[in-house]
Structures are given as C-alpha cells and as structure tokens.
Length: 165
Image (tube, rainbow, N blue to C red):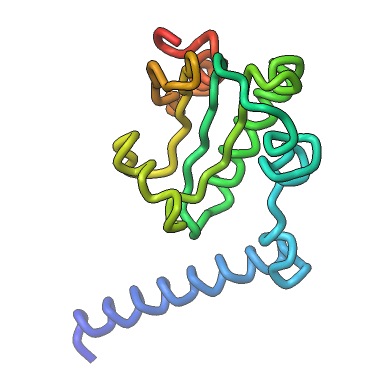
C-alpha cells in the first residue's frame, strides 16, 4: 500500500469512528429514544398564544409591545434553548405586563404558509428575536435583539431595553 492510501484510510477510519462516538454519546444522553428531544421546553414554561387564558381570550390592547421569536420547522437544541431562555426571561421580568396584555410573547414558525410574510416584514435570515412597539393598533417601530452575549441579550430582550423601544 502507498503512503497516500494508508493516510486516506486512517482519516476515513477516524471520521467514521468520530461519527460513531458522537452518535453513541447522543443516545446515551437521550435514553428515551428521541422522546425527550421532541419535548418543547418552552411549551412547558411559556403558554402558547392559543392556550386558555392567553391572547385569544382577551381583547387586543392597542398600545403594547410584542416580542416575537421566529423559527423554522427544523430546530436544533440550541434554538429551542434560545426560545426557552427568551420566554423565561420575559415571564420572570414582566409577569404583570404579560398578564395584562401590554406585553405579548409570540413564537412564530416562518415555514408555515400563513407566517411567510414575517420573513419579508422583518428581513429575517435565520432564527430571530424581534421586539415590536404597537401604538393605536399599528406597529410603530421594531428592533432585532442581539444574541451574541448574554448581557446584551438580557438587556435588549426587555421591552424597555431595546434600542429605542
């Protein structure tokens, strides 16, 4: 065998071994055969818009702040954590505003046909957190929320901490 063929074979074996190792580690972390991976941590902590006692059951307030989390159908664990952290941050920092409707938390799947307009409206390229100010029932301004640092995320994910909102 030539040296080139030996190196190629060793590299392929290394890659195959790495994939087996990663797959085995994932199975070991998730012993429920994928059932836990399908759980949505946000649904366990943050009520959805159509849950009893939420957005559908109360009149829309004309002056409010809406925090949107936009995602696609395919979601990784990090994307789900990002959504959960955002929802939990809002619930812990603004429980009164959420209960009164002055603050709304909306999770939107932009891959669903009825939500495709959000991609154009907010120039979405990936999963995004948007804070929108609504006055007299009309959106007046909106801002992306940074996610590159935890401090910036916490500061900007609050309705009062967003750029000029």
